[in-house]
Image 1 (cartoon, rainbow, N blue to C red):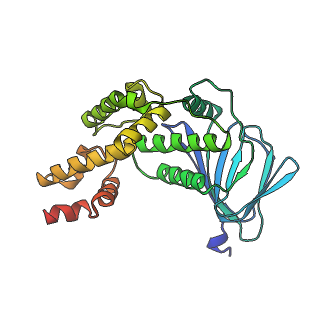
Image 2: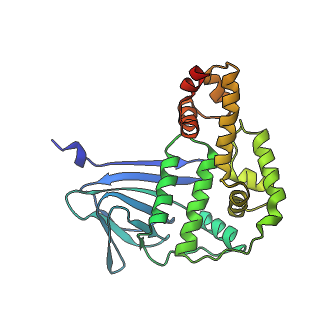
Image 3: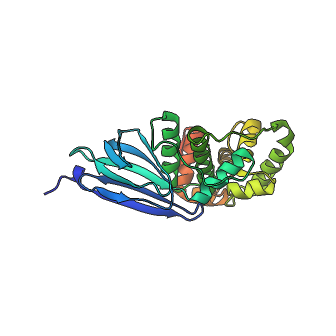
Length: 275
């Protein structure tokens, strides 16, 4: 009987809002033959050691290693030992990448290419892990899109050498005030990054930069902070916790509890009892 630790498994899912496919797997014996994709592959090895051949060169990816493949890159994929390897991945399209490049540079771009298929940049690995983990949890669309755009932006800035367009954040304070007002008036609704950026006539990435610079936190954190403040007031009024979670816009009771405890250090139930 095969040990559970070496049983292969995989999971593919689609993020409808981002129009993005994500993947997670563990392979102990499975090998990928030479093939290519019509999308990018951005993956991090989380267990064991993986290797792949691209062109005539063999690349080895240890735990914490980043794999970066362009559309059309012909490659293989295989474990390097009996231990196998586990990894997480997501698959941006050419349109995803072109849009982020244009938001960073301020000009339209042809489809960009990563110059190297491997990186061990720890900051980029943390970004990929954070986005991938958030995408598997029931959290707000604003957080998902923010992490997605931020991750792609840093990947392209560091590995494709996209230069920032010049910015003067002080001139955008009115836009940030307008965005904050929109969040405050619609905190219980589903708010996306695209919706906020369109509301103030800025690109998503530029909006993220000016908002963080002015407020000191990204918009999804500001939204969660506001929701927790409203929840505290509703709990003090004696509303049932399940109703509070719904009234302030959290997608589930567990998500509400998680965010509440992260922010205040106690669960909503304990907070209510202490009041």
